[in-house]
Image (cartoon, rainbow, N blue to C red; front, top):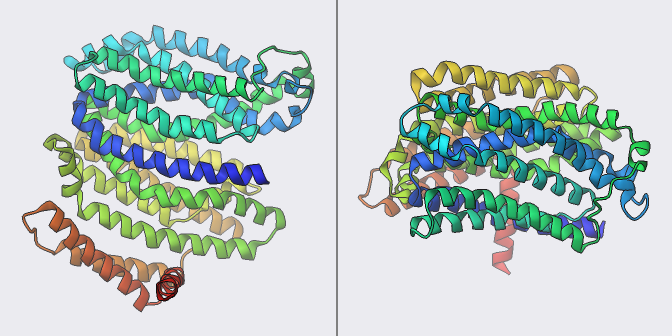
Length: 496
C-alpha cells in the first residue's frame, strides 16, 4: 500500500495545482489573449470533436485495460504482450475514425457556414484528426500506467505541463511570434508532447513493451475484451457527450464566438463542482466496500452525511460565484463575455442540484443493479441533446444552459427515486431544509448590499456579509455538526 498512498498524495497535490492553473488559464489568461471566436474554435469545437473521436476510436480499451491487466501482470517480463494488445484495436479504430472525419469534413464545415466561422473551420478542421490520435494515445498510456501503479508523472503531464504549454502557445500568438494557424498547431503539439513523454516514461521504467505475442490472446480472449470495451464506451461516451454537446450545438446554431463565450461561462460554473469531485474519489471506494460487506446502515449514514456536506459547501460556493459575477467577468477585461451571465446562473443551479442529490450515481454504479447506471447516463446525454436542439434556437446561450440544468435536475430526481425505491436509501432530512433556508437568507442579504464604486470593495462587502450570515446561521441552527467540529478544532489550535 505504500506506493499507492504515495501516488495518491502526489496526485492530490498535482490535481489542486492543475486546477489552479486551469482556472487561471480559462478565466484570466486565454480570454485576454484570444478572441471569443478563437476560443470557440479550439475549446468549443476542435477539442470536443477530438475527445469524442478519441473515445470512439479507443472503444473503451482504456477502461478495459485497467479491468484486465491483473490477469496479464507478471506473465513474463512484457506482461504477456499486454501493451500491444491494449494499443492494437484502438489504432485500428483510429484509422476508421480518421477516415470518417476526413470524409465528413464538408458536412461539419457546412454546419458552421456563417461567414468567418466557416473559413476558420475549413482552415483548421484537419487538426482535429491529429488531436484524436494524441488524446487517444495519452489516455491509453495513462490507463496502462495506472494499472502499473505509476500515476504521478502522467498526472503531472496532463494536469500541469499540458496547461502550461497551452498558455505558452497563446502567449506566443498574442506577441506575434506565431500566426493563429501556428497557435492551433502548437495547441495540438502540446497534446502530442504529453503522449510522447508518457512513452518515454514507460521506457524509462522498463515497461514500454511493443512486441505483440500470441500468449496475450490465450490469457483473455479478444472478444471478451471488446465486449467489455463496448459496454464502457457506451457508458463513457454519454458523459463526454454531456460535457461537450451543448458547446458544439451553440457553435453550430449560433456562432463560434457564442461557443467561446459559453465555454467561459461553463468554466466559471465548474468551480462549484471541485469539492464534489474530491468527495467522490473517496466515496466510490467506500461505497463499493459497503456493498461488499452488505452494510446498508453505514451506506445510509454516508449517503446522508455526504449529501449534507455537499449541500453546505455547494450553496456557499454557488452564492459566492453568483453574487460576484460582475467582479469575475471584470477580471477578463472583455465586456462581450459578460453576455454569459445568465448561462452561468443556470449552470450553477444544475450543478448545485447534482451535488445536493449526493452520491446516488456512485451507489447505482457499484450496486448489483449497476447496468442501470448506463441507462441513466445514456438517458441524460439524450435529454441534453434533445433539449439543446429545442432551446438554443429560442433562447441562445441561456437555452443551452437551461437544457443542461433541466437534464441534470430531472435525471438526478429519477436516480434518487431509483435508489430509494430499490434499496430504501434517501439522503434528505431536516438539516438540508435548514441549510437551504440559511443560504436563501444569507444570499438575499448579500445581494441587497449596495455597489461601492470599486469592484474589490463590493466583493469584500458581499462576500463578508454572505460568509458571516451563512456560517452564523448554520451554527445557530445546529445544521452541520461537521462545520462546528472544524471550528472547534481551529479554536483549540489557536488557543495553544
